[in-house]
Length: 74
Image (cartoon, rainbow, N blue to C red):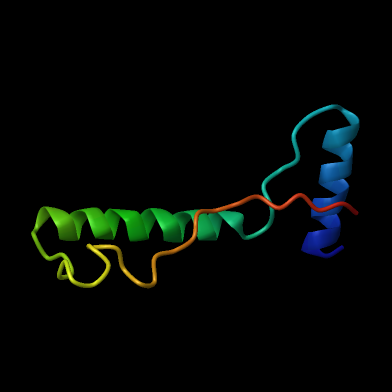
């Protein structure tokens, strides 16, 4: 059984019990990457190593998007 089939089965079992579905496979990696990026940005600000104000007033051009949960149906 593949990981996605197992996730679909777990989602179906939990939804039949009226519970929330488990997190999507791989979503924890995106959350960890986002947390690392935010911590790195805060550390750079604390040390005064911020981008010049001329470039978007301190907002990096490659800022990650906020995480959104996608609801998928089987």
